[in-house]
Length: 364
Image (tube, rainbow, N blue to C red; front, side, top):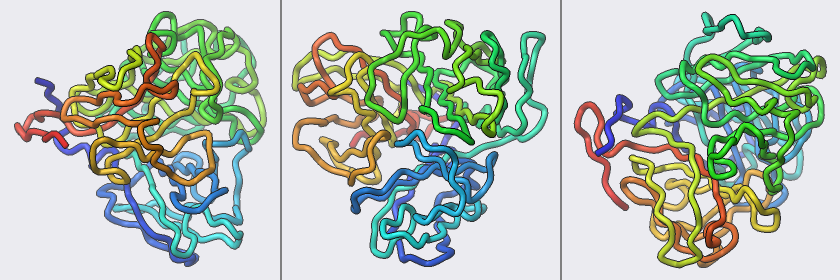
C-alpha cells in the first residue's frame, strides 16, 4: 500500500476545464490554489498553440511547448494576465485562433503550485546562481530562471532537496528546443547521456553537450555546452524540475509487450494526469497527454500532444489505456504506446491509495 503526506493531490496539481468567452479578462477559478505554472491548450479548435505561463517569468510572457519560439509578449492569441489565489486570469487576444479564451472554444489548463522564492540550497559545486526561482519541496516541483555560462559542467541549483527525475529547459529570448532530461530514458540506463525534445516527436538524442553526461543530484542539475541549455545571452533559460513524491508523482519507464492485455505501470496512486512517450522512435514518438477531467472513463483514449497544435481526439484503440487506482495499463498494440520490448517514458500525477489521513483512492 502506498502512503503519502499529500492527502489531496488537487491542492498541488490540478486540471481545470473551461469554455472561453473572448473577454479581455476572464477569471478562471476553482483550481484550489495559487498556481505558479499554468499550461493551457485549446481542445476543440485547430491550429491553436499551447500556452505556458509561470510566476517566475511573470504574466504576459507566453512560451509554447509545441514550438521552439522565443517568449512572446502581447500575443494576439491571448495570455495569462494574472495569477490569483484560486486560479488565473485569461486575457483574450485579437487573433482569429484564440489560444486561451476564444469564444465558445473549450480549454484544458494544467496547473502546478509553487512555494518558496528565496533561500534556495546551493553547494560548493554550484556555478550558476538563478536570477529568480520558485520551489515546492512538498510536491517536488520547481521553476528556475538562469543565464548560462557556455561552459560544460556548469551546475544550477533546483531547490528540490532530492535529485529530480525530469528537467525541462527552454531558452527564453531565443529560438530553441524544449530540451528534457528524464530518468526513464534508455530504460533508465545512463539517462544523463540523452536528451529529449518536448516540442518534437524525435527519438532520444545521445549528445553530451546537453547534460555533460552527468545526472542531477540533490542540489544541482548539470549543463553541457549547448546553447539550447547553456546560452550566456538571449534572456537566459527557464527550467521546470520534477521529483518523485510517493503517492503523488512518478517519473519512470516501462517496456511494451505488443498485446492488448498490455503492460501494467505501477505508480502507487490513481493518476489524474499522464504523459507517455516512446524514446527510440520518431514516427510513433508523440508525447501523449491524458487526464481524467477530459476523459473520465476507461478505456481512456482522448489525447493531446505536447508537440502538436491540433484538437484533442479519441483514436479508437490506437492510444487506449486503463487508468487504475494504483497506476495505468496499456490496452493498445500500437507503436505509440505498446510495441513489444520498446521503451516508453512517462510522467504521472494523482491521488495516493492511502494518505496520512487514511483516505483511500478508488478505481475507475
